[in-house]
Image 1 (spheres, rainbow, N blue to C red):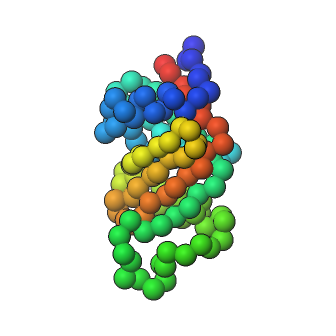
Image 2: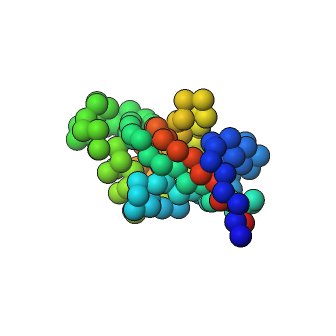
Length: 124
């Protein structure tokens, strides 16, 4: 039976030891972002609070400005990005004291700042 831990510290430790092994996998039906680690075989579930999207480089596209928009826009864009090119998404930074993670997409060059309401790590 798999062990379940309810703390962001397990994801932070996993990411600090082997950051290149963590992959953003999918969005769960219950607004949960799921990441997995190929090294320690852990699966990390992040319950989404809010998602803020911003360009990681200056955008030349006037349709994609860096401005506050609809609060659901970030989550919608993250979900679309995950469907279109999941392999390009990576965990770039995290702060367990503020319950924040930063996901970057190498394909569309966006950063997704995710406020996490609950962390859960499943170990096999």
